[in-house]
Length: 382
Image (tube, rainbow, N blue to C red; front, side, top):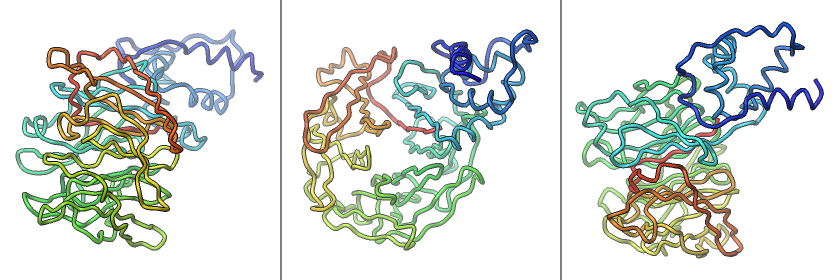
């Protein structure tokens, strides 16, 4: 197949917006392509795997075969094999009953099915993480802590599997298809040091060695091929300035003393807002609304500039600070936020650890009426 023919095939799927990933208002039809030169199954699938995920809703209308291919999940496996993955941004804002899913550039969005949990879970605090094509949401139901997972391939919510240690207020991070969690609180008071890894293929949790410190209200990231846990509070509710990382090759945790010792401690403080871009660790200091980059060699932080949202208004709560490819993503209330106009603001920038000026770009997602208070935000690569 020459370049002209491949381009013609790709252009046939252009367009914007979808109703859902696979759910459509019309049944797919098997059209008559007898007069069209056919492609081998292998070539056709490789082309389909490179189509933006935001177009999969339209792709499901082309034929029953395409719909079956999408529902089987094989396209996502092929995308993984050829290294063609796209980030999706999942957001749950205050007052919303459903999650929103945005594409990389916030050009298309859709709502996820309503999570079929009880009122206690819907109205309570939740933690989120992603693993492969699954979004995992942890929170309290009337009968205790549970995990729910959203399956991207099926566009449905399922309960479980539960962690080895049910927990809340924990650190989490994603590496490839695996998700990692550590620390947190079990029950009302027990602060944990335990850690686990989730395998989305087998839908199972595996215990990891325990951390050196018990931590709650901590944050996690993947840096230098290691799972880092930063900050938090200990079992006496004291502020922890040390961090630690899990070295899988040595199968042990190592402490980094004074990692966040320069960070101001304020009351009603959220877990540290951290993100990794191009293997550099960044933080949003909520008391000053400043972005800082971590200098590993000196174990210090360098100030880069201010972020254009109000992270200080609620001690960091309600703000999403994530890595989105080679950019930083921040969602919250704008600097000129008033209670009369409280729509969420979305900004992105490519940070330069050398100290160049941060150039933020405002993103219009068409959801300006959503609350600026972000309850949960998670990035999925698939």
